[in-house]
Image 1 (spheres, rainbow, N blue to C red):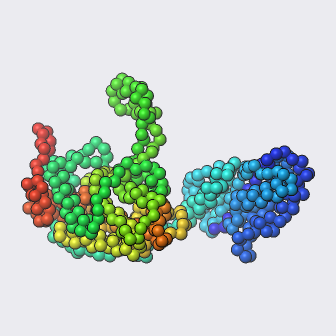
Image 2: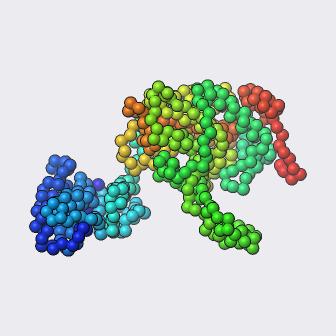
Length: 527
């Protein structure tokens, strides 16, 4: 990709001047800047930026600046402002009060044909022209905040990525092909061939909630869930020394921004809009609701007016508070690793049309493990968790496999970034179990992830400014065991008759509930 830049630049002076008085100084400065200032830092044999023309007015100096990828016009303009202000101040007692760029143009030339579909939406750009292998971006009234925040550089990177279809970051980072099976149990005896959701619904073990991807789990299913959760806590979590924590599930947008989750998966979260705290403000809504007698466009529109902008999301990853716990802190290496777990409530992800049955829901429960350690130990902790999870699955007589993930949630937000951080050779593994009712073993659809084992490298350490007191590298990690999915996996392979369930599960149900609880029946339900 080749880049061309040009910009109209306005330097506003601190007072009105006689143009003929300062023009010789400006002329001398422009000549020197083109020869030296605007070539500094540019590789030998390459071109930097250049002031093509200028005009001195009573209160403004106008310039036309061109540039290259090695020094872009907006960067050149900021250099010019600083140095020219120093010279004008010394010689003429006049400063430069403001820098404006009324018009900025960037031309990106690619070695392939480009269509408008390749560049569907470009934020900030006032005009986008696509012709053959060229994308021409025009920005109007570029201010100093845009320059300071490198907005134009990000726009260029965004367009280049969209056109050149850069590979997914996980494919560039991982040293093992995503989708590779690194371990598996081999085939097991399957005792059930029905659809888990339909059988659970028929028996009254679950009832669909009005919200999409949500279910009410009645006593038999809840008892099985608790037995499985307690089994995993004993065999995996506590055995490896993880300590309990209670994490909030209402997560501020600022936290999601720092995690880069907003950058990577904004369509996968539930957003929370706090109400304006004024009871009288809601009188109109309550009256609309009474008069219409239903939730419709009118009543919902009235409610929407009383809500603030989204300020939170419902926890989509469950590990979010761990990084806030460490934010801006200095870690003592003598107290590492820090290993916590949370299983205090629901996790929420908006699956949209992908939500289906009990195996893919929008609201689910997990045991979330989080840790921070030096790199080698962080990866060792993940391996220990994986090994303990394999042993647990073996004890439950489940058919399982471990796969190199092609979708580490935390990497999505770095897709367009080139920040120099250290990442592990394999960012993420998925622990999957076989669902016979979904198809043959060879079908990807017949396997469901019940655990995700991630080492983030410096991703969150960098995003939350976590330091080690001697400056050594720190990695974080997280591993979630999706207990509600483990329940589906166990029922899919062992069926709904308790006598067919693994002994460790039966023992816990008998000990805690004195046998499997019954369904709370009504005259009309379950069928």
